[in-house]
Image 1 (cartoon, rainbow, N blue to C red):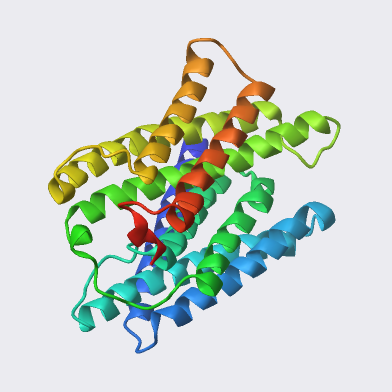
Image 2 (image 1 turned 90 degrees about the horizontal axis):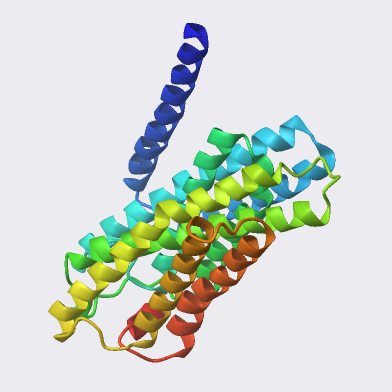
Length: 306
């Protein structure tokens, strides 16, 4: 028993040590005189490699693919963090300092970083590598969309964004986005396991449902905090807590959707296929909240388009 606890504690410490080494590496690399976009592009390439390895692993069951997929994702996250820190440094040098999550390019790369980090934690905790075949492609697509479609210029923040609320509201919002993304991937795997129950490639539905539920129940309060913080910021910036702006409305819709999921699961005893579908449709509201509203519907949050 003591030996098992010792091995477990040693494993936890090693994981934290690796994370700390990654952070220090990112800080050191960010001090090099290279543009932040170089690091973001390098991270995207590593995400692409990791994506290929994760997708190939279920087909070939090769230990090299297994190790390469995780390593490439970890290195991609380190370089993503490097790009974020370097972008903060460059914005400071230009006299327009702001945290690297204020426009579309920064938001997408920040989102990909948070999703990848949460997934690596789950992979280590549950040894559920197959989930990466669904999560890591999303990480890659978010980063690639930022690289190819969003403006990479560092520009001064509009007056409404020059506030300490930017640190609180946006970070909590993207933790929510990331948690819902992981829950979506796990729900998809759950539905696939139900469709192909005999396959040994997929883990048990109980484990997948547990991951889906824990992902949502952990980030739902964070999303709630994001809405509250956003309301406080809106009151300070625009003189009112709520203005029925399209972004505000869809953030509330996302909250109501996942709140209904938790209510159905806790109070009504719903489990299984119907709650998995609720998560899938809930993630569609997340995509609408971020992409459709930011890109196509004008409002007080239009600055998010760049």
